[in-house]
Image (cartoon, rainbow, N blue to C red; front, side, top):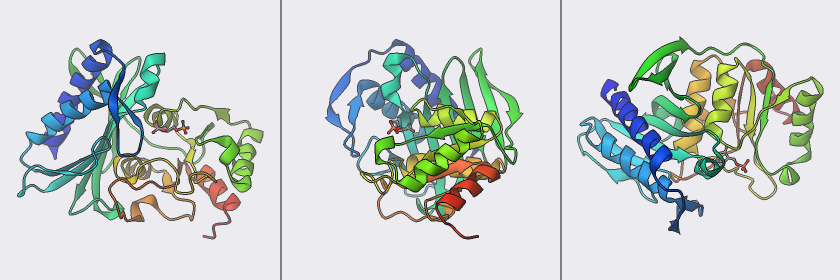
Length: 281
Ligand code: P6P
């Protein structure tokens, strides 16, 4: 798997270059989630596909930007689900964005996930890798240097509430408000990667993207976004559940583009979700 992480690093440096020098602007098409595609979305996807395709152990690549997974090497061991440039619509206002990777064996269900990683393209470029633990790296002089192991405390101070608020269910709004009443700080940019990175690096809190009246299955994609981060939060000592209190890593997929409501956080905050969602146990 080491060679996969090295390919991710090479891809990250090339995507970072593209973000800084390629023109913005939209393509004609949409991705299969019906979202307009930036030329940078397509470029980032091409770069990452090129780097990962060189690795003999890679069997299948599934990208958020492509309708169908790609068979790379019939004899490969790993299936990689990735979002090449998450939150790309934030680039034109110069906010942080990211790339997300889930490394799977045998399938794209939660139980098949064996490792995950993400890159944050912000004031600094950082890489986080979760194998048996969660390790943070910073890009300096063309190389990624180890910074620290990420561990979550039992309780944090950050509340990152996603989703269209007028479409929130009442019990979800009450749960979110209960944390603000305790003095939690609102930290939400609309970029999943920097928003979750902040909760992780600050040691805890809650990131939520719930099911809503208009989108009961939420917005965030299981294979490319949710399961990779669920693995990272659990390996960092946190929790990652859906609206029924199920571990996100226990979820199955029907389609590689499935979405799910998702809650990521420390124990105190996830217990609060369970309380307001009337989840027992
Ligand atoms: P909303 C970006 O488009 C994204 O997929 C995630 O990065 C982010 O968490 C979410 O959508 C933001 O969605 O509905 O809050 O704007």
